[in-house]
Picture (cartoon, rainbow, N blue to C red):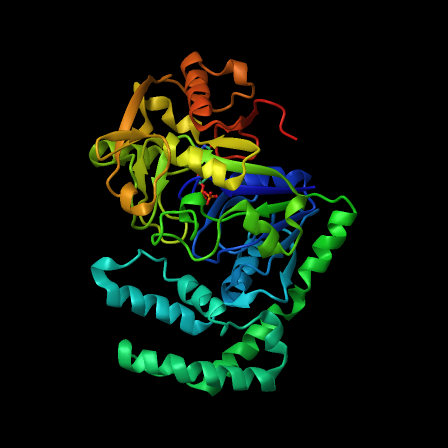
Length: 428
Ligand code: GDP
């Protein structure tokens, strides 16, 4: 059985926690897209972790973690992350890396920094992890697959050709020093030594696992609105954030994905630039940011304050639809317990007309939120295990949102820990 855990919105919905929780009954956890640009925060018996590259199932001894072919693989970051969790007492995890995963090269990180510098005010708010230059090269067919590290002669020639182009850009567009092929080859030899123990054809491993009826979790990064096709282009990430891409980025048949758990946060947050219709500002936003998540809404990778907003039914309905949602996991509901009243964005007003359909970017930029205000429940809901024990207004909030988005909320997360979960309807 293959399940996907994906985000409905801009990312940071709490996918890490839900994956970590569902991983208890999984055999394989697969990262299928993205790179070290976003982070998942996980709290468990070993402590608090911000993972960037490793799948969130890494903390169980019975699971195998897979870095799929769709991932932007930053080898030093992966190895540092493995080392840092082992140092904190987590048993050495079983990790497999696809031989077809492509490598984030040192120059991808440089180009990301230089381009954001060049764009200045128009920059994308990139985390400067090299992701956009990496995927540009992948689709321009000058990327380097992990397997290529093992044929040095061929690699040397390829890198020489790549650097011819890169150096023109470095020197003439960015006015930075050129790169040297021998130095880069030395770095790539080090990369080869670091990654060699993990490299296999992961599609074979997963194909066999499917035959043996194992449980496979596909862990998405970011959310629908950051998808390059269906998101708020161009303020998106560079690889697909949709569950459908899980089949491609893991190398499995699309019809094997039977359950799609879409994670929605009980309010909104976003990082980076781009339209954010239900955004709030000032003291109202500061308070939600301070109280949000587990210790505040600040980027797991960059530490920068996240933009805050009320729950957006228009974006979330669309976000769930594009994911192909079977279950919604509704997270961080406990955070809203301080509010007397909770506004929810139920429509977008664009040129005088109200719509509940998520528009294309140039119309989205004109959209104004239409809010409906729901009463708060004014108490702590952490520790509650059954849906019926939640305060009446809290259940009304959940049910109102469920009706607006049109997908079943089967799990409610009321705290950062693995056990802070209320199963509502029977999720498989
Ligand atoms: P991800 O990238 O989607 O995994 O999201 P984040 O790493 O940004 O997770 C959101 C933050 O909220 C993390 O700090 C989690 O520990 C925390 N978190 C997840 N679920 C809950 C919840 O139900 N309640 C609270 N208070 N915090 C949560």
